[in-house]
Image (cartoon, rainbow, N blue to C red; front, side, top):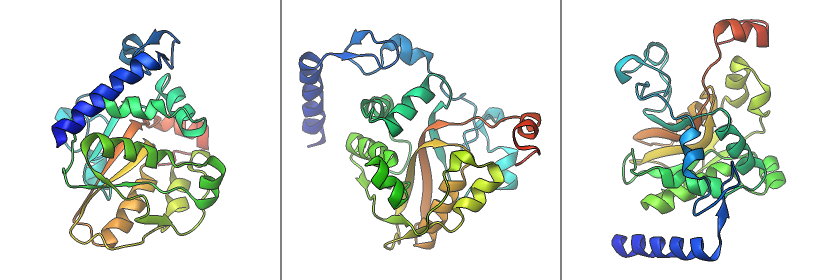
Length: 248
């Protein structure tokens, strides 16, 4: 059955390529993909030797000192790229301006599933007001693409926001943690389940930490996380310039 499904997807992709020629999102050249090979090669992948808990550089790919001192609530994190130009432009366009083929293309770059094959995908929920304004939840779109590609169950209603929060991008590191504290609640039991949280970009991890906590509280046996891109933290002296102090 899985083989027939894969063949059908391949056939459909070929038909779509011939009937609907595409242009590269970045350079505008015609081609069969949303992103052409040269532009894809320009996107900065994460370094190979990164901490498995936070995806920041770590010697020999071991758990870093930051995560040993203060472990994130989730167990393992996978991120595809560094969140910087030009990828940042694509993610913002998909998030706010309906450039959905970007999410489809990114999901196709993941050749294998790095987590439990029976895991439930839980996208980070949007606040109701923001969902109404935008019309869609970008984390759910990403989860749907990954679920379709690897045959995984997506449960977008399993966790909800129980209070409105400020937009994280406007806040510094400490304010982000306070902003999302106790902001999520599970709507059902996760007893015995392995869960993978899905989002577009990870900056401080505050949102995923609170979401993971809510899922564990509902009985999950393991919580991991998948994001498209990882923001690289700014240096201490740059934090002083930006925030007036070395905010963690």
